[in-house]
Structure formats: C-alpha cells, structure tokens
Image (cartoon, rainbow, N blue to C red; front, side, top):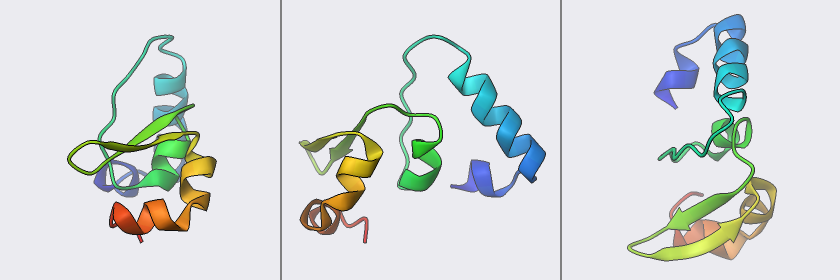
Length: 72
C-alpha cells in the first residue's frame, strides 16, 4: 500500500504498466487487494496456509473469506 500511495497518478500508472509488461510470474505480498488487482491475474489468500485462491474480484466478493483473513 505504501508503494502505491507514495506515487503520483502518473508514477502509479507507470509502475503498473512496468510490472504488467515484465512477462513473468511475480510474487507480491500485500494486504492492499485493490492495488494488487491492478497487476495480478490470480491471487492467494494466506492465513498460516492458503485459504483462498482465485481472481481478486472473486476473492473480494467472498465476505466470509475476507473476514477469516482479517482483510475487512
């Protein structure tokens, strides 16, 4: 969250485009699912183990999962 918050809008767009253009798998650890949704096709939710997997939209729509992961 700090990384994205500290950028101006142009810097944020440039960072997103750079990450998306790398053409490889990147692992990002964050609690900021909105920022992750800008660069990630799929996500895993961890709470000592994997408790959810899917697109960011699918995961965010699962209120029970978000509560178990302390993301809401």
